[in-house]
Amino acid sequence: MIMLHFAAFLFVPAPGPWSELASFVGLATLACAGVLFMWAAVPYRQRPASLWMLAALLGTNALYLALLVVDPIASWALEPAAILFGVLPLVISLATRSRFTHPLRWSVVGLYGSLSIFLLIFERRPGDGPALALNAILFTVYLGCSIHFWYAYRRATAGAFITIAGFFAWAAVFVVGPWLQTAFPNVHLESEVWNLPKYVVAVGMILLLLEDQIEESKYLAFHDELTGLPNRRLFQDRLNSALIRARRGGSQVALMLVDLDDFKQVNDTVGHHAGDQLLKQVGALFTGRVRRSDTVSRTGGDEFSVILEDPMTRADAVRVAKSLTTLLDGPLQVDGHEVRVRASVGIAVFPDDAPDAEALCIAADRRMYAGKSAAKATLAEQSQPVFLPTSRPVRKTRPDLQTAE
Image: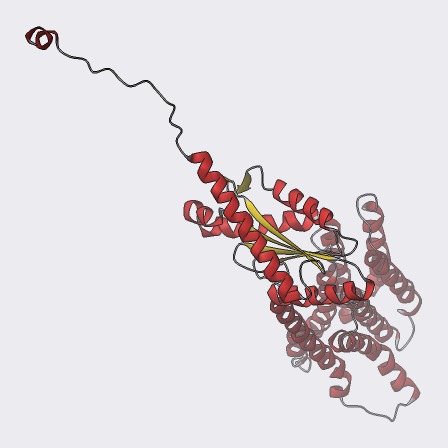
């Protein structure tokens, strides 16, 4: 829209109605760009009321700017169009208030209500009335962009600050420019100066994209891509931090290693995609069962590690382990299939079982594999065929042979 705004203004010197058309397209695209940006910044933009608000603002802005361009032919319609600026957003907000409300929506009502009052007071002012009305519309639009962007990106980063400041400066252009022309008529600034806020906003948005990419890279470096759980690197960092806190407070930390016993069979029977979905489901189940202060991480293909911090005893850790394995007792629905898995758990407690993180992991790993071996032995015994003792069978002989003997 901004590119179309620049392109249309190239044809303003054209003769006749082409000049008016170019002026209208240039002004309407500039205003509509801001309105569309405000709509894109709200988290509820797909709601019907938000779409009605978008249509109302686009329509009223385009209508009023068209009336300004063709003035004085349609000057009689300026007052009704100015009233629409305040009435339509208010009516839409009141009509949908029982179903949905939001601070940003009422900020739009306040902004455009104030604009409506300003237009009704100054649009008929001799000499500079139309110019004041035009600048007031564009000021309202881009002040709204600044407010909406601040609400959407409330974070202390350079990209957010530069973009918000750029939108505010963009809005201020439509106040400072007319004031300079009135107070200092001999001072002339090139148009490029007034276009600087547009480029400031562009630079701020590029910085935001870079910041988001850096944050995503950091997240992927410390989290498992499939489940979203902490990966081994973040797990080691949190385990070391937990042990430091335990040493200072004289408390205990329990480490649990949970291995899914039948996971390979799931991959072989229903496919790797179903196996991935199973891992995500198990990770979500484990995360929902432990406390927020504890850590559930995926540290291997089918292995999960759980850090249980103070207050925590060995008995507490055993109860948590039983609750986690109980989650897997019933069948899990994965991609339309019923999948059954079992889990082997190894528990090690600091400082009773190990003095540091590495030794704690080794102790938990050994106990987990010991439990896995014991479970396999038990299953093997249960699957052995049982032979009951019977009497020795009696050999049957043919009667004719008995007679011969």
